[in-house]
Image 1 (cartoon, one colour):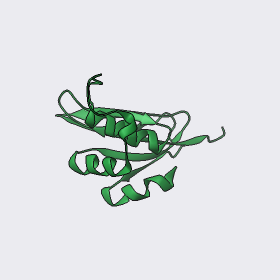
Image 2: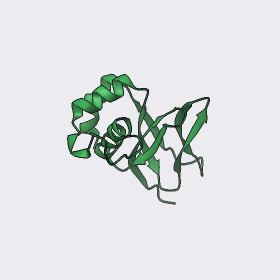
Image 3: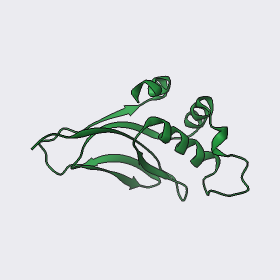
Image 4: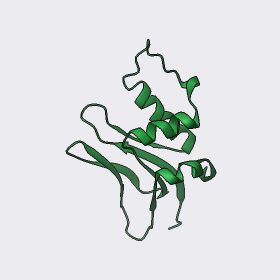
Length: 120
């Protein structure tokens, strides 16, 4: 069986009622979704934040102030990302279908945020 991997990125934030758990095909979409979630978590039409106000500086500010787990994943096509939730916290994990495939997760820390653009 041929090994087919793709790079995806994910983030999670545990919370009671306003958590974040999603998977994206690129870093830019992930960063924009995190900022949108923090600035307008309920998609209110009259909210002052709109997606055209996104900046990388705003992303860094939001992530520094909030507790997001950001992960870059080399994911095999037969596997998927799921999320564990416990007591208001959330974390992503790879659902292994076949143990012979070696999908990999790389957690992104605050010091790596400037490098996110180079991972696309």
